[in-house]
Amino acid sequence: MNAYDRQLLARAMEGAANAILITDRRGRIEWANSAFLRISGYDLSELIGRTPALLKSGRQDRDFYKNLWNTVLDGRPWQGELLERARDGSFYQVNQVITPLLDDQGRITHFIAIQHSFTQADQERSRMRFEAYHDALTELPNRRLFLERLDQAIHEAAGGEVPVTVMFVDLDRFKPVNDNLGHAHGDKLLQAVAGRLKSGVRRSDLVARLSGDEFVVLLQGPLDDDDLARLAAGINRRIARPFHLDGNTNRISASIGIARHPGHGADSKTLLAAADQAMYRVKALGGNGFRIALDG
Image (cartoon, rainbow, N blue to C red; front, side):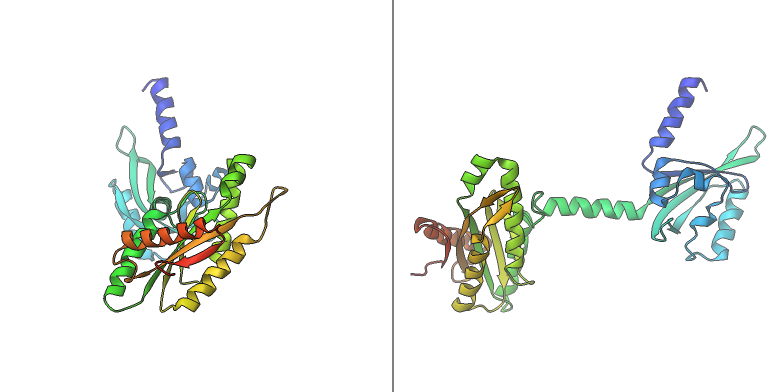
């Protein structure tokens, strides 16, 4: 192997996404890549000369490790799942392959362990799912998640279970804020609005951002006109309070349209459209209010 190949191999091992650990024949650590240091929480200086026993979680018994060592000392690769303990005391699960490295005479000189972290994979899947179903700016559920939850709620309601109501919330006078103070300031205002909306509804209600300055609330449960009026009026009061951001005072309000299943729509598209139409009737009257679909 020439110098270039050795450098390429070294870079590949160091940059690998999987954790890699190399020990001598007695199991003393000689090298670990960055991925191994990240997942274990140790610095390389804390690992050199130690054995992987410092990672033991206590969840694997002596027979487990006896079988592992008998396999690799016999010159055969070992593969299995391990629950390890990181430097901070937390646990992480890996699928590990340990391969004996042999010299020209076939004698074992080192062992190389390559780990695939289930914990990291699960975290990555969770992150990707969150991003797919949530608005990047406000971290509220996005249109996709809202419609899925609304479809599910309507399906349950059709079976005689929990009634469904939708509130369509559109901000009044938001565009001048965006135009005069810039999109970065407008984004902060939207984040603040999201916080007030979440604090203005029940824990069981779902607040989502559809797009721009449009928000929706999914309410489940028996709610009469007085209940809905109290909830909507509460949201109007919260949004109408001044927002103090970056030395600026912003005064906006909200127009809210309300629609019930099945009276105002038997499916999610029709129900949302009814709430949207009711919201525009509020807009036409000057905003900062609410209206139930087809009411009045």
